[in-house]
Length: 164
Ligand code: CUA
Image (cartoon, rainbow, N blue to C red; front, side):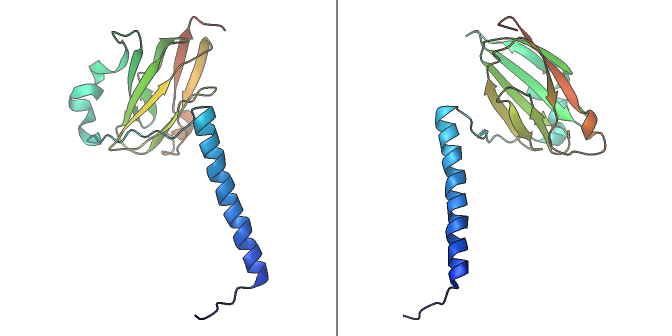
């Protein structure tokens, strides 16, 4: 067997890099287990070009719906440069399922102080489950650069009840 020469300095860096990778994976596993923070895993495809023509993401179907079990389903469309509908209202301490699809390019959706943070990839339906604990108005901002109007792309979440 031929021996491969590895420079001692290089060897040390292999351990450093391996350690960083291990630490990063460890942090993700830790938060996934303890704080239920995890990447969205809903793989559901949709034809973005025909989004508005019918079905779940047609204009008249968008918005907040109350389900029979008391939870809420929010259906939204992200398009340059806005979220539709522009404003949603949900109660606090109630399970909320958000389903959002992009009409054009890659967008993101982030609601500060919540676990709602998802990429909205054209061709896919993004689904997030959350529960707002504090009442009040929260911005829903696009956090993926989508063009010149990216900075102005936002909507509003109004959370009713609960503690403010
Ligand atoms: Cu949409 Cu940035």
